[in-house]
Image 1: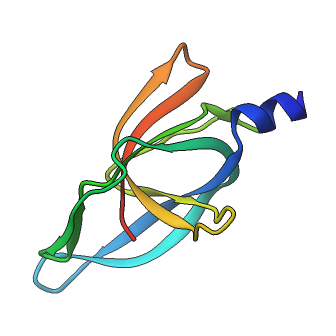
Image 2: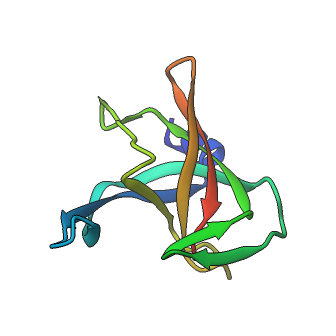
Length: 122
């Protein structure tokens, strides 16, 4: 089964959760990240090879889109994903460096795999 999994999901990623604290003016301040799930097998494919990117109000806006397919369960436990607070960090492969993806949409295919549309952050 390990070989079939490696063929279906040739990449790995880490799901990071961003934590925020409230500033004195009531604004949210990014304080840290925690690795919620690590070594998650996945398949990352780009939807749009070239895009544009800009910074606006400390938010990185990107049109370089990717589809990430990954199992819904890791070590027998169903993963919970939250687009508002979590990012996907795809491990480096070949000549490509690691990349951070912001989750745009999540769907579940038959409860077996997540199909995620995401935007590149770095």
